[in-house]
Length: 360
Image 1: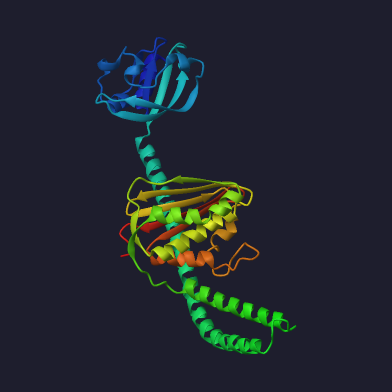
Image 2 (image 1 turned 120 degrees about the vertical axis):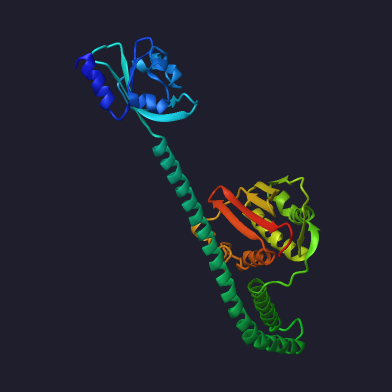
């Protein structure tokens, strides 16, 4: 192909063509390039390639040619950055020359960015829907438990009270030395245990009556941590507190909230029988006061995460499985949320978010 034919060929291409000599200066270019960059031909001929290509380096290119789909950044006359995808090849008629065949990929990049953003928005929406579904499932379980609990309280408590009263009457006819005394004690103890379980079931199933007052959350947490000091020291657990300097005063039922945090922190301590770190972090996130309780204990299997707030679900051999259900009910009744993250063998993080203005 003679020079005239080559020039006609370059002009008929829909891609930008720039020919650079061995010194990195522009020898030739087509009208597509001029239109793309806004220059006249005389503005660029024998100018260094760096004038229109921000990341041009002739030294770095020579040993790598040919290059396919190399992403470069062209620079227009008006200072606009124009991403291009270039095929970089040697020129057969002039072996020292390099040809840049580039196409404008601004629209492609914009579409990729929009698709990426859409993908992220879809993933966020899916996460929100899943979380909403989980919340709905938990709420429905609590409502169902409430209906069952109300029936249990009526159908079981009345005959249970009669059993307990009868046992107390029988107990009066036998002294401590009687061989029947220990059996009477077993009946009494287990009857009281059943009554306790019914009470706990009702507590977790129905919204607690709240006595809302302004209270210092840091003071509450300090009190709960103090209550588990014996276990913390005996198990060799290190407590780390990272409290926000912002005001920890929020509207809450102090007694109910203390019960919720006591249960969560005690669970964290019990998850580290051979020691570890218990970290309590507080921070303000928008309109919410967040408390994160993290342990380095045994962790929770992934399939159990969704079930830990269910009534009577417990991984402890002697656990009743109502503690976290009650915690969940208390926090929700305050207009708050509870999230759990855990990895088996690494630990668990409970994040409790409570509205700064109290429940609306």
